[in-house]
Image 1: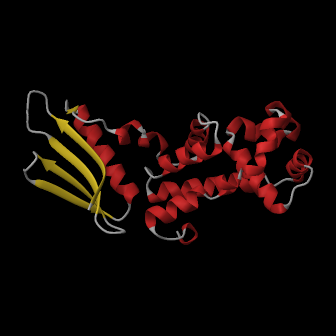
Image 2 (image 1 turned 180 degrees about the vertical axis):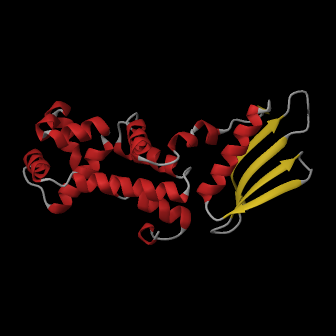
Image 3 (image 1 turned 30 degrees about the horizontal axis):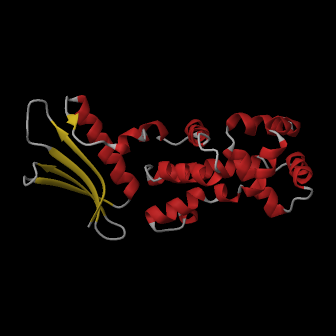
Length: 221
């Protein structure tokens, strides 16, 4: 058994803590355990996905904090603001992409998105992937391909896919302005545009997170 997340809460003027744990017991089983006191009774609920377990943990933590409990330990899962990304839709999809831009390094940006996605439910991960695919297909235009070709002095079909992954990762404004007129890409500067060849990693974030979390191919969902 491994503890994935833990929070210790205590009521005002009461010494007995309530410990909330999300633990894994096997590859596909996640248990949410609410323990009253260090050796007290336990309430246990089992989930089939880590996303659903984290969602339940966040909900209970917020309910307890609203009732006057105080956190004895830090609760990073709450700080991740899972509720702001659920339900997943175009607004929250763009919000996630744009929040990730605080990291200038592509690897760190991708890791940030992955971390946030592990807090999502199965349904939200699938919807994020669907939205990303829609945006990707919409950006499949001859005008943008010509722009990518000019930037890199050549651009294959795979290279253009990487370019579109990069474009989506730049946020809503850059994406929509570029679709409106590829000439708007010039405002980003040549140095930034040259990095667009490294956008492949953004294409598979949802599918790899989904497979890791739910042990199945996202295409079968």
